[in-house]
Amino acid sequence: MLFSFTFHSLFGQSNQKNRVIILTDIEAEPDDTQSLVRLLLYSNEIDIKGIVATTSCWHKSMVNPESIRKVIQAYDKVQPNLLKHDGTFPKAETIFSIVKQGLPEYGMLAVGDTKDSEGSEWIIKELQENDERPLWISVWGGSNTLAQALFKIKKTKTEKEVKNLVAKLRVYAISDQDDSGIWIRNNFPDLFYIVSPGDDYRSATWIAINSYIKGINNEKISNSWLVQNIQQGHGPLGAVYPDVAYGMEGDTPSWLNLIPNGLSIPEHPDWGGWGGRYELYKPDFSNLKKGPSGVPFEPETRSIWTNTVDRYVPYIQNDYGRTVKMDTSTFMDNKVTLWRWRDDFQNEFAARMDWCTKSFEEANHPPVIILSNPEQITVKSGQGFGLDAFDTTDPDGDSYSFLWFNYPEAGTYKKLIQVEGAENIHGAYVNAPKVDKEETVHFILKVTDKGEPPLSSYKRIVVTIKP
Image (cartoon, rainbow, N blue to C red; front, side):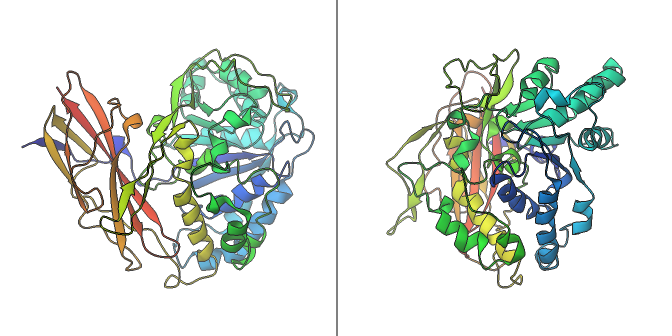
């Protein structure tokens, strides 16, 4: 045998949905409403446990749960049609019941002995549920509602209870939009926290969702694309998707990696996915430029999951011969870790918006990848091994294309490993590099159908190379 197989999904991953509570400063600007529209289209894939209206540095003295309810009302009108595509889309009544609000106060002014809110109490309630799944907190604005929940937990629980509850929390914050984020990280040093600190948003990873990138096609973040594919002719939910004022959906990256698309493994931010890739370290952002938010920028006292860099050469279409080829352009920065997947998640957003009005037969759905090999493989140094997805199918009967590629930054072995021969057929063959210590390498299979819009699914194969 050239290699051994491990017959289970990646690191114990199962079909369980990731659970999340959203903290949103909705009405600070239109992008929170935009992100909420998209989120509800994934309510069949993500277990939404709460949507809490909060403040932020841009929205200091009010909260707007009524704006959350307006979007859910639009969802209610299309939910019966969404059920034609997946029978697990929740009823609007269920989502209405989890809309909560924090205090209409800014930052740490809303944290203390008399500062409980229905939002902070709801976080504690969900965290104490008999549920082994981590509880993700997706922070679209200020984080003071979470800070208050943690303040109360620390004051009312034993040290062991605090440790156990904090261990179940996962936070992805869209930068720091009040002064409670750094307080949380300083006072709970073991808390799993993803953030691009400070308010220099131009340097943040999440900004890549709406950044114009020179040298690539940016059509799918254009206003005209949003009108045609999201806002107009797609029913009530598309109609409540507002025009861009500052940037499209700046909050969406905080939950994109919770979508079970075969690429993202939420417990491993360093593996990368639709929401970007992040590494755990204590950052030195002393060169960041101060933004206009007024949020204090303090040095980090602990390691956090934060910005990291991918080196990315896109595959592009080839009209003659092999259907794909490597581009001649190379991109390298932290934003690449997110926008490299942008066309894929925008296409899927458009397809799901079609689900609001179209029958199953009229709309497109992602391919279903079936691997002939496990998702974890162990091989010896220098040995060859094969990967295969011959039994892959498409629910709509569409033709589809394969693409196998190595993702060097996701593993410990950082040199690019080329797939032997053609990388666009159902089977791939790889020669493991010679190593003198154990290394891991990640291979991604992307399968894209030829429907309208074209949709992609993924599988990640983690290969351990033994010396």
